[in-house]
Image 1 (cartoon, one colour):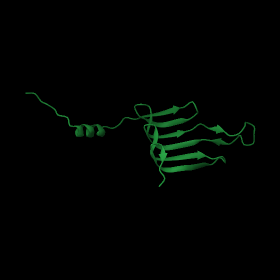
Image 2 (cartoon, rainbow, N blue to C red; image 1 turned 90 degrees about the horizontal axis):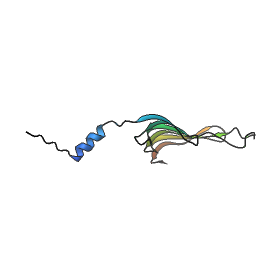
Image 3 (cartoon, one colour; image 1 turned 180 degrees about the vertical axis):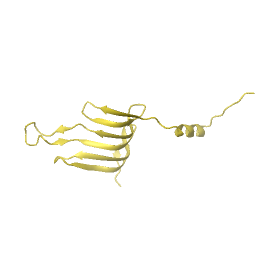
Image 4 (cartoon, one colour; image 1 turned 120 degrees about the horizontal axis):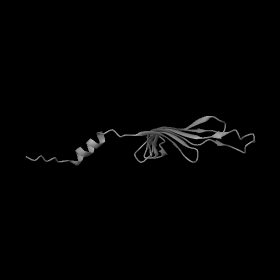
Length: 115
C-alpha cells in the first residue's frame, strides 16, 4: 500500500509562518562611525529589535569655542529588512548638548507616521 501526501498551499504557508524565525543578535560598525546593536535577518539586514547610533561628530574647528559640541542621532526600535518599521524612538543630540526626541511612535518602511 502506498501513502500519498497532498500539500495544500494554505496549510504549507500556515505551517511555515508557525516556525519561529531565527534572528541573530549582532554589533555592526560602519565606516562613518555608526554602530548598530540588535537583530539581523538571514541577509544581514537590520531586522527585529535594535539600536542604531550614528558616529559622533565635533562641531566647529578643533580649538574653537564651539568645537566641544557633539552631534549624533540614535534610533531604537523595530526594523524590517534594513528599514525602520514599527514602533521606535529617534533621538538627536542638539547643538546645546541635550538629546531631543525627534519622533517617538510608529514608522512605516523608514518613514515616521505622524498621527
